[in-house]
Image (cartoon, rainbow, N blue to C red; front, top):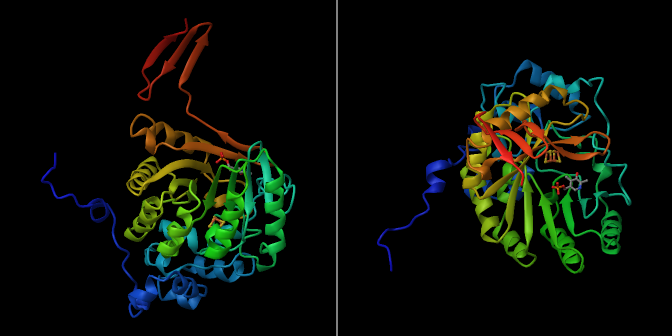
Length: 384
Ligand SMILES: *Cc1c(COP(=O)(O)O)cnc(C)c1O
Ligand code: SF4
């Protein structure tokens, strides 16, 4: 039986807005604007350029001058267009423009907060869990996030993953039969050329013991133009391909991002989001809920909320752990389970990801389990 209803995809128009272009890029052609190469070439890297996009504050000015050597600023025109020109605390600005606070190294800050160097059998591969590895394939990113954990590597051209490192990594994965899942990471895995990515995927697919791989990228957020039809067509050959991305705020969920996610999902990719809990950006249950609802509309499953780790110069982004627990408490039961990610702390020193949950278990005596539901009402479950 056929229905007479004209089915159109109104989700895109109803829930997502196109990104308006600031004056400085008004003259760029649509062809240029939609080209990731143009976006990459025109990244905002100087104060002079930034001042044409936003009203730069005194603190941002000073922080830029002082942080330049350590951790560059680079913002794609697309992402810069999402910034509020007049609000220094705009969540997009806080993620991309240097702030004075990042120059402060807190006493508890760690140089290698996740102990990634410790579990490296070969340079470029972190093998911490029994059946999966983190594989670094580049140290570049489309944009440098101010809250980045890998600051000491990212944006340092001398630490770029060489071909030899790539080959050594692949050789390790090939000979280590316990590995079935490879996280292709960086930097941003999509800073590699399509050819290099295809080379990596084809090498991994040729290994009998490799079942799945994930591509870790923030390009869906900072450079959605990178997700071209050609790229998606290439991925189709290597399914199942999981894409792990990093949306932090509903403002990042634009029509451009929606389209990029749609192209990947239509090519058969499974999309997951790894949000980082950041003070002043998304440390609010309502914001996280709105973000996660938008993500589901883009066919992206909220996968993790990371407690901000102990990397140097990001202590101003760290929230109390209580905040993360409160967010989960305010999501679970109150909205679709699909919109509730796991809240984890990546343990300092290489302990791995440790999940935290609000306490739903009140008491456990023998066969009797006293629990509370999402509204705080108590229930008893009896084991046989
Ligand atoms: C996060 C991570 C993984 C993947 O962990 P999942 O919980 O499977 O997503 C693998 N290796 C390392 C070193 C990691 O940090
Ligand atoms: S995309 Fe990821 S690796 Fe690159 S700067 Fe941002 S957080 Fe760091």
